[in-house]
Picture 1 (cartoon, rainbow, N blue to C red):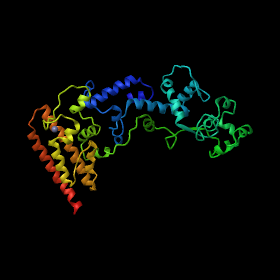
Picture 2: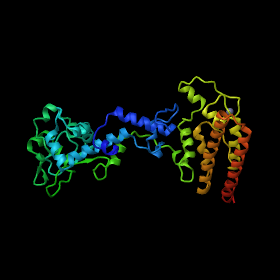
Picture 3: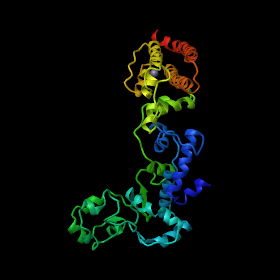
Picture 4: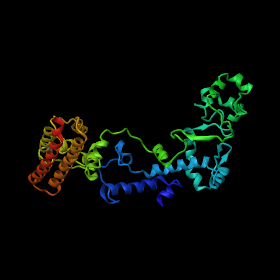
Amino acid sequence: MLVYSISIYSWPVALLKTIEGWTRNFIWSGDIAQRKLVTVSWKKVCAPYEEGGLGLRSLISTNEAANLKLCRDLLHSNEDWAAILKSRVLRGQQVIKHHIFSSLWSSIKNEIPVIKENSSWNVGTGQLINLWHDTWCGIPLQQSLNIPQNVSIWLPQLVSDLILNHQWHIPPLLENMFPNLLSMVQHITLPVEETLDQLCWNNSPSGMISMKLAYDFKRKHYTPKHWAKSIWSIDIPPSKSLLVWRLMHDKVPTDDKLMERGCNIPSMCSLCHTHSESTFHLFFECNFVFSLWCWMASILNTTLHFQSIEDIRLLCDGSWSPQCKITIKAAIVNLLNSIWHARNIARFNNKQLIGRLHLLGFCLTLLSQVTKLLVLPLHL
Ligand SMILES: [Zn+2]
């Protein structure tokens, strides 16, 4: 019901933000009313996996995309609803500027300029296309020929004025004023039969706008993240990958991150009790975890010197077989989760770390056996 409604009407942005806030809270805390301090921004959460998101759909972008698609449908459809609305809001090719009582029109009127800026005309009869201002043979002719507005209004206005018997025919007046005009339009092939002009969306091979294309147009884009493919895998439980995803966004709620968000707290690493806690210290610098990384590096016959969180991928960059790579990725993801688990146990349950160390050591020994089995054939 919600999706149907936002695909027809433009919802108040404040209301959509409130609903998205509840969704965000539920994802991070399990309670729509409880907000967490250190979280990945909602826009990034709504990006596709390969761009570092979780592939969720933003309601605001979905609403905008639905309005864009509906606007395009209005301009092209001959159904009753479109014919009635067009008779109320269009004067020729111009849109009315005064208010009318129509919930549909108020939803989509702002998308008309967006459609025109991102579409170009396929010439049919040319009766719907403005000769100077519309995009139909590359850049609008008024710009490419540099014609002042006060001149163009006295000239023929439609592309159909240049067509005679399905052939390009430049009137003598225009030919004298713009000698290059014929060569500029001649690369457009005219149909041999009477067909209507079609306004085609630029980013679509068919010229139509699907909901997917419209959403992709409206959403915020991020540069692809090289680590995204590494952390999400059918062989690794998503609940384990989620911590690594937060780590790659530097949004794990360690003491330094909480202090950045305004929490005035004393800080001490719960694993070594000798340093203040930061994300980088906890996962890479702490004496406790450093020995684990050295151990893993020795199995992989490499050396590690972490400069940043993204250096994790150096472990996976060797010429491993596909089976080895997935094992190494799984081992890294589980190692990071074990560190975070050990830290939380030590901090919140005040449990002896030695016990956790033994458990962790057992898990890692198990992993090493599996890794050795996969690595050995490669070096034979
Ligand atoms: Zn430490």
